[in-house]
Amino acid sequence: MTTITLDVPAGRPFGLLRHSLALGKRSLIKTLRTPEQLLDVTLQPVIFILVFVYLLGGAIAGSTHAYLQFLLPAITVQTLMFASMATGTNLNSDVKKGVFDRFRSLPISRAAPLVGAVFGDLIRFVVSITVSFGFGLIMGFRFQTNPVEVIGAILLMLFFAFSLSWIFVLVGVLVREPGAVQGIGFVTLFPLTFGTNMMVKTDTLPSWLQAWVKINPVTDVMASVRALTLGDGPIAGPVTHTLLVSAGILVVFAPLAVRAYRRRA
Image (cartoon, rainbow, N blue to C red; front, side):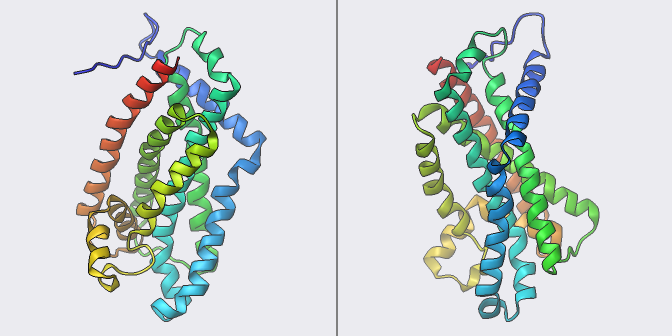
């Protein structure tokens, strides 16, 4: 069994957390100084909501309002998933520019730059959720559950996006170009996001596609958010599956990303 150490300097048991937060702050400042980096989490959800609701709402649900209620929780999950891809893209750009060479010369944990990059991108996830639900409320979307359940849905989505980011951190460390991170990301995320009941109910799909939708873990994430925001369907099963999948991704891909980064160093 391979053990992956984090190289935390001696005598600093909380060094990894402090260093990660400091580097996360750097990532956050970088994002705020270049707000165009937020276009994918501000403009993209608005475009998706408008296009899907007004093009498909009448045909699928009979009214745009009914379809908005069905679609918005799931499309918020989709937007978050695509936003997580930017973590790997930005990290790859920093590696190419030599920024991480400077980090390697500092007396900090080798994992800190990676953890900091993910921490810094949490603001992107918060913005994505705020824009999606905020624009949905303007269009007429209404929560059907209590504030505690809505907050639970938001926290669940943040944990899932945080975990998913580590897959793209690993990709960002391994590949040579930011464009390659995006290419791999789109190829991976499209079947995961669109191969769900995001736009239509599962029982309306062909049998072969239903089989994929039922085993697709993203379906559980979307079902969890729908249950917590709309009271639509059971909560315990989908939420438990989402937590287990998120934890599994984190446990597997975070150490792999750190190991790949150490080898590249």
